[in-house]
Image (cartoon, rainbow, N blue to C red; front, side, top):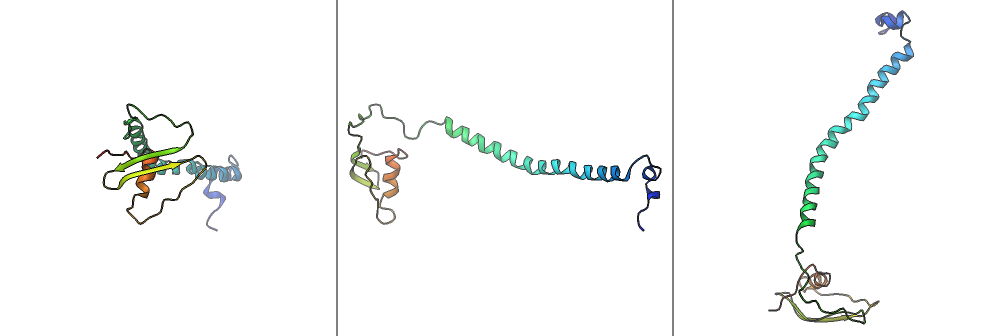
Length: 130
């Protein structure tokens, strides 16, 4: 037999129960379970801090589409309307009236201006006057 009580004098002389020895071994292994993930977590902390710094920079940056000095009044009807809007090289003289509850489909080939019009409507793009 590769193990015998004579190898462990405390167990052999009765000052340490065999069950307590097993509990100590399992306690040592169990304590590592709480520490091992810390190395992985530490690797992610730096990336999370950099991402938080980028988000902070974005939220503090001025709006790329500032509010106009003299915005058009909100229509009493609640319609979404644009008149003769152009976006440099993409859209030219677009007009649209969309009453509440109505839907439209923007269709056309790639590069026709569908995404640009959608971005314009939610103020992710600005119109040009030339």
